[in-house]
Structures are given as structure tokens and as C-alpha cells.
Length: 178
Image (cartoon, rainbow, N blue to C red; front, side):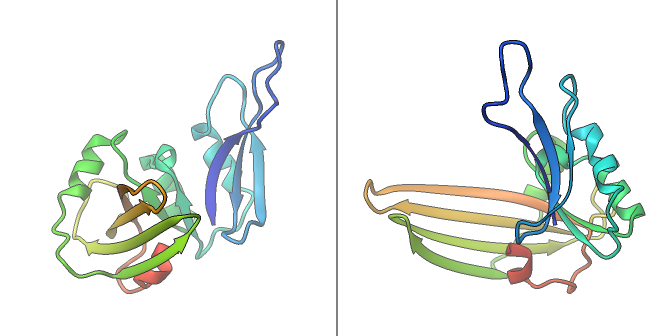
């Protein structure tokens, strides 16, 4: 499942701040739990209470960089769940450690598609490690997306790093990419 927050478009008025929700949903789009965020807060304190209403045993939870928090990883581990967490530059120590792992040349997943006037190539590399200063992390992922706009001939390259508590061999590169 994935956990993410969204601000509802059109919910802000001159007298009221915008309504923000945090939800846990399956990758098929089924919402399992949802909470409104207090107007003077953000999603971080609502993470654990949101998930406390769901049986997480054996689940794999994908979170964005905002929820790449030591406390969140520990909470998921205590609930017998695994995480897949984005490591961006807002966590510079973690991002730098993951970026500098020996990635090698082996691809664990490769995918090419053409749609919406774009040619897109995505590939994934997985690196296992003995220790990383992030709770219960066993592997890191390097996900690269190369897009070429066919109309404008514009090329973009995006590199995303993730950490996961899933032990090596539990999920294939294709499953992790999904």
C-alpha cells in the first residue's frame, strides 16, 4: 500500500485554510484509511494514527520523502510491516549514503514504453548492505527514468533513491519497480 497526503483543490476559502487529507491506499486505488490533517499541522504526526486502524502484518508500505522518518520506519517495523521510502536531499545524510553505494552495472529491472508523445525508459538497480543509519533498512534502490519528448526533442533524466526494510530476495526488481 502507499501512504500520501493531498490538499483538496477548492477547499480553501477566505475564512478557512485548505483541507488536507492523509490516506493509506492499495496500489489498485482502494482507500484503506483516511484522516484529515489539523490545519496548523502537517502529515507527519498523522502517519502512525492513520495506520493504527489497519492490520499491517506482512504489508509493504510505500512512502514519499516527507514520511522518510526514523520514527515512521520504526513504527512500521513494530507493526510487522516493511517500508519502501524515498531518500531525497531533504534527508542529506541518508541521500548521500545511498547515492554513494556501489551500484555496479547489473540492472534488476528494465522497462521501455511509448505514450503521450514520449519515449520513456525506466531501470532499477538494487544494492544490499550490512548497515545504513536508517532503522531496519536492508536494501537501497536506484530508480532512473529517462524521458524523451518526441514533439520537442527534449530529454530529461530523473534519478530517485529509495531504502527498504525488505530483505534481499523477498521481492524481484520488477515487483519493487511496480
